[in-house]
Image (cartoon, rainbow, N blue to C red; front, side, top):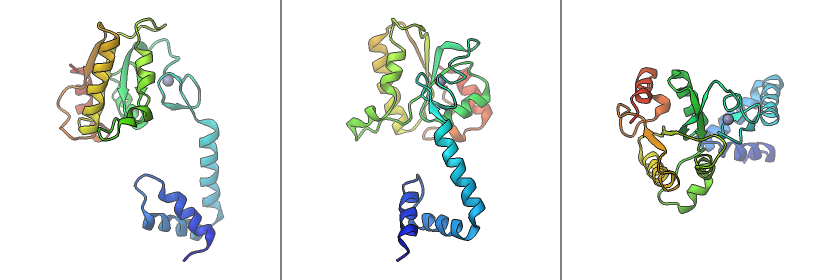
Length: 200
Ligand SMILES: [Zn+2]
């Protein structure tokens, strides 16, 4: 129905999370109407993003350096790892300033109906970080995942696996206070702060 170039961009945008065909079409026609300057800015921002951002090979957050500034900071307590699902969760926890340790971004959660889903996350890297004979001895792992089905499934799996390889490791969860099924990304800062401080 549209020209091949328009169709091609619609297809590419449709792959973004939360973007359906209609939204993708709206974006494409917005670009075409908005003129070259706005599109050039977006192109440059995307190019910058891909050339300057890398994965921290310790915590798997995205950063402009590897290891990231947080993982290479001696002042932070590298022995305590706060495990989060996505980089945005790390950002909201960091904003509370309640956690002065290290992080691990899983980049996804376990889907109970998909056995392979464990492999799509950074769970193996977390287990490797928490082994007994590593350079930085981990004393505590805080599981800061959403209290929903995928979050619970992942926390149970992690507790079992971490316990199997290290009997003395302290494994905690955020305190109840976050409503069941909620998303820590949208919790208010005070609720989240107390959930971290009163973790059990
Ligand atoms: Zn890092």
